[in-house]
Length: 191
Ligand SMILES: CC(C)(COP(=O)(O)OP(=O)(O)OC[C@H]1O[C@@H](n2cnc3c(N)ncnc32)[C@H](O)[C@@H]1OP(=O)(O)O)[C@@H](O)C(=O)NCCC(=O)NCCS
Image (cartoon, rainbow, N blue to C red; front, top):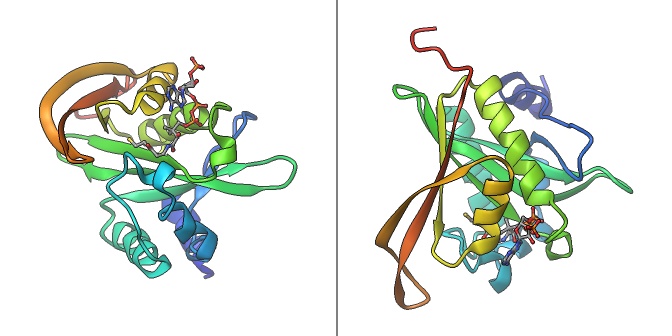
């Protein structure tokens, strides 16, 4: 079996609803120099924990999640004019006991910012987390001031659920965390 088939077997083929981007499983072949360059870009990483990661670090993270089944990574792909990998969406860590997970997202190609890529990716990731993984509730957390990320989640149907004052030290300043969430209306306890 090829690595692609193995990933598709566990993550599904991804999701495409004809929007500006689609999701497909992130594969080891995606993790080249261009990918590592996203995580050296100060604007891309300004609000991210993952900074300066190498292609090897990225491969380890992808495989650790896949093998432990604790998290799963999808490539955010622009379909037109030719398929282009522009970012990642991660479902996890997954808490199976409570049927919850976090979702995080990065659009690494800055020329894609402001075109609805993150909003569509969050919509698709939410549908996969609920449909494919059967989860009940999803969370995401942002450093106070990451307005673009909060807006993308809210436009995708999430709500701002909590503010946690002083959760981060960011750029040398203590800042709060904005927690956004969404519930799966189709989830049935014990189902
Ligand atoms: C934040 C990020 C995900 C937004 O992606 P995007 O594809 O540009 O988002 P969208 O085009 O779907 O825009 C969603 C909304 O946010 C707004 N927005 C986007 N970036 C913004 C910013 N920096 N400041 C304020 N609003 C912003 C958009 O205008 C849009 O709102 P509107 O339709 O009302 O105008 C992207 O810039 C990114 O990956 N940044 C680096 C990594 C990061 O911070 N990830 C989030 C960690 S939790």
